[in-house]
Length: 309
Picture 1: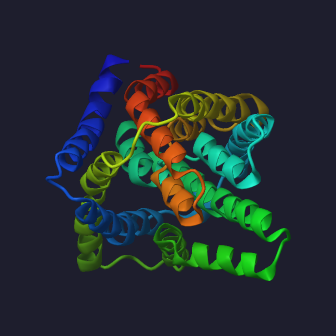
Picture 2: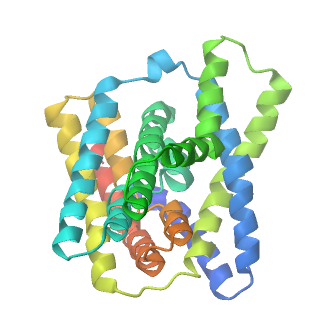
């Protein structure tokens, strides 16, 4: 446990440094926004393309893993949804809370950290978990919020979902990378070096950006933030682990990777969605802040458990 904690500490230290920079206004909100854009559209995309271009989709794809992660995530999503309706919340707010409960920071935090902690073989399972989050649950929240407001399922909704997927650089990078791999085209050395240098900026840039963005978030409604953090940090890895290990019998190493991915704190893009649709952004803000702070300990515990250290 101590060894894993010491390995994760530099990642959270970078988040803490970003938080300090944002809190002291050494790094302005505008600077944070531009750094996030750089990481999202360039550095992280280069990393994901390089990873997927050097993998074979046929070798990476694992139906049991995908179904297990989807099942576990959907189960927690359902729990948060039921609790939200019992509290008499409207559909958009329930959808936002469920997103907080089940969608972790796999892109910005999970890909670089879990690859380092669990080794290069973790890349494939992490990418599959990220793809499920982006394709399935990012689409679901649009359907729920838009459908609730329009009162019906419309072609405009499908257009919004389609454009959202096409414009997401992480999805584009993964798809293009696997397409490149599928054509069995070796990456030229200069291009590989370029992608390695640019992708190398993803880890420090993403972690710093997470911290700096947290500095602008408030911790209001702590009881709700605590509940959503419990769902994300405890229930999500628990149900994904149960599904992977006992229901679908996923390979133990791959199961450990997706359990670790499920243990990550609430994703920052949930706040972007909440702001975009004008649905409980302060609630999401608090959940991200609280879950990220607690994950310093909980992620280390989960990774130590799955690795047996």
